[in-house]
Length: 565
Image (tube, rainbow, N blue to C red; front, top):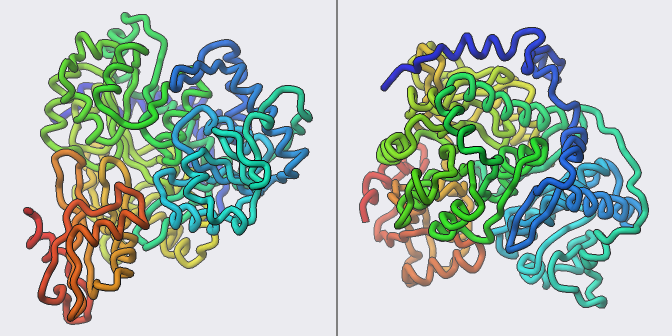
């Protein structure tokens, strides 16, 4: 199956024409005019406020607790009022959030937005050095964290330079850490409404990128609101192009419910799951930790209708004994993926086990607020190896090594421009200028667009490893290993892995006269970086690493040499 039955171009034109729900207009950006959805919320504040209409409906479920929309907004308002009155949080201040997925994460995020401050979600997998580095990067006025993150940062509390709020156990009063419960209790000072302009800072979301330290991506209220509207557009286009799948879902009579296993510090978890659910009055179920068998049980018990995650997680779920889309997983309307092209075997499994469903895929990045290309339903069945159709509010072009546009069918670097693209990397003007060169976001991904307008991602320029959906900068792992006293040279790269999509491999050359085992080196990384960044394999090499005439490391040769264990 190679060609969608319906013409997506005509459907997009109908959805975006004057008077349509996704009517397009033109807005002025710093680098020129851009297309935007006319009816998108003007700000992230307005988008969150829209969730109040859902009242007593259930919003979130976690660890046996049920949160209604009313309970959520009561906690949000109480926290926001106290952040203003007691912490003196001002518009533009940063609030770092370091927690596993849980309802309090959403409360902290929404309260921060409603007072005009800028939430900065941190990688909850990060160890002490990573968390401390991220906090130093954004200089927050407030850090909201759970017990585990508080324990990791305990030696640094006095030097963080911000108020610390702990969600979990009651902190020792002598520590100076604020307890969560009193901050969200009713009866506090009323929240004072604030107004933010579309171009004002809205969120800071970290991305691994290709450097040795994560960068904080700054996006405006307009960019985030447009990105959320684009998710609605994808749903509308998919529904119009897949009437059979929509009819089957409607016949089940189930209220929309999403199982969230993607971390909320990712754009995919924050936008496509949390904020989309909040705005649409749907239901969100959190897992404390990914476990495929437990996930299937939750799908069955909670009647989950939507599951979108890294391809490796989707594959693991379908491999659980007893998984059956007609029985144990009958509530699912399909599955969703993020990232580049899917493994052929997984595509075949999904198409076979979820025929005529709303399964789909998307391509985007933190720097574009997740917007780029996407498809689901019948369009996905027609082009399952593509990464989707370009969004109406993003310009996409493929360029050669000299930055010149390439015609359809020719592969080159994927560049994006539009209303959802970031304002820049926080505090890193040089990196911003490099990424936004010529007014275009250079993604570092290589791909092509076919004659029908579908994007195919085929490779990466950036040296980023995608392990079970978690992006790992090879340079960060290399930097960590290079600090081991026994290491002379190191190269880190990805190799294909059936379970995780990609595995982390490190090739290490030891210093003369020094010794270190693979176990020693893995333990060194584990002591400084999150567990998923620890190499799956470490190869000890006697000769120097291969380099070209200019001294640049030739990783392609290493990948060839060490592709197999």
